[in-house]
Image 1: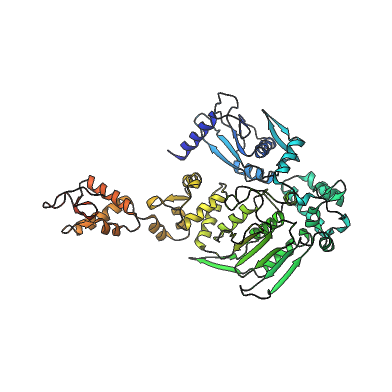
Image 2: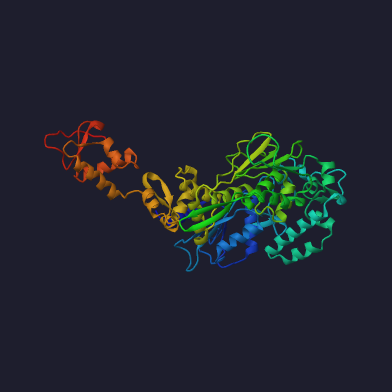
Length: 563
């Protein structure tokens, strides 16, 4: 079955399903209404995620009609991910019942994070029967209660607007304006530029009923206010040139609002951020040991997820080739190493929301996905959590580039393909490059990458990166070695050995030595092929038997053989 046939079969199964909160069919023959599309995606996310299927009638019996809407779905997907901070994907299906020039377009919408409703154009959308409606206050309260108590939303007694850092607030304002302009929301950008400080804090939901919350302190507080109201809300940076005990070569304590030190902290890390020079043939590249994006995301994760009611601080320790970030409090409720890329539950939801508003957090709850993706693309080890327990999250980012050829593969894929690749896709690429086995639960994604021609079948049910990649990096010989010999060549090699040893016969053990890359079961299957074609014959008992050309020696007695 071809990839397109698989897609059609998948769609046929969906047509028989029941439309509900997680499945939405729309005829949508020619519409290009992006706002309506975004509202439906928002509603699906708030219902736990699901599929929005365009080009199919929504009343039973459902029929495929096709849609010409959103002729550049990748651009539409990017716009959706920008306006709705979730990793939305899409698929196109050329169903035979589609009208000429149309296709079925499916948008795959993930669930909202635990405790965080998703909104579009300032409103929280949900589905009610066949309609889109604004979410009720009762439902909003239920969602906010999912993640438990949000300390960052609590009123901070005695904190006043004068206790906040004006420069930090202005930095936040400018970042929010820049995000609005990027989204081509000129009216919002203009409004933000004229807001009073009090109204800016109110719109950011850090000032409510005239009272500032802890999010305002943690994000915008002055040094004096932070020391007075929440002394443990500090970040301690250390640079150590080795693992030897003793004083750090540099130490800096940040006890103030995040927006007052966020850039300075990165600059402090970056000043000792050496470049690794890698060469592949005539191609030379330089890669920073610590990429700015994953480091910044890791810092933001620590700020959003730490437990501020514990007395310890966030520690960031930089070594020449690794960065360690220790944050008070274990993983938030419901988050484990097994689901850290699929589930999100920010411990301090109000802080996360403010960071999302101004664009520091691009996709709600997706910071760890971005860290994984960036490290994989630079052929660095994935994040390690060996120091994590119920009292802290200990994250390690290793900076050594492992395979410069893989970095060039990423360059080629990013340049040649307009397809969206998620975190698990990049993980599959890296696993294949390292020769690792692909987990069964990833086979659906693996088949998609096979269909796109980015990976190929290798010998013995293995996989390898596409031939075009090896040609691109000047490693055609490596491709031939990994791909192995074709079936006819394997048969010819076995036959050559059997002919060369026709006087004494060839045992299975030595025939396996002829093709060391293949398991014995595969060699046995090839020998059965030679036997069926009359080119070789086993003589003797089981594994002790020997193989001879043709029908075997005239003096021998043919016996059952386990080939």
